[in-house]
Image (cartoon, rainbow, N blue to C red; front, top):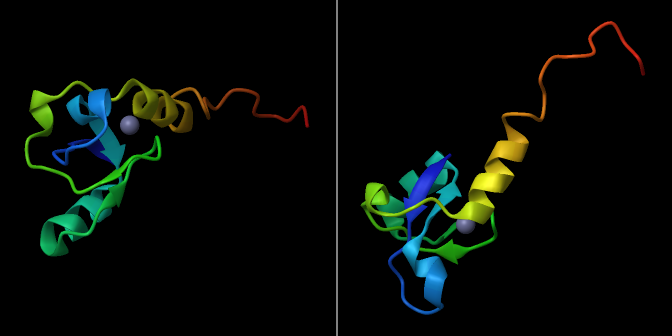
Length: 80
Ligand SMILES: [Zn+2]
């Protein structure tokens, strides 16, 4: 998963963000031009320059909720 810019044209501010997409999907898209689906639900064909764009806030929030903070290892020993 990594921030991925979109270069298609259409709907405003989302065009200016790099959205989080699974890396293998990006690879597949680079090979055959199939659209990818971002964490926030955005569908597009990625461009090549993720560094130029700020990360989509919605994708970032979802990504962080999946990774950091989701499973912090506390509470082992069982309160369930
Ligand atoms: Zn997004």
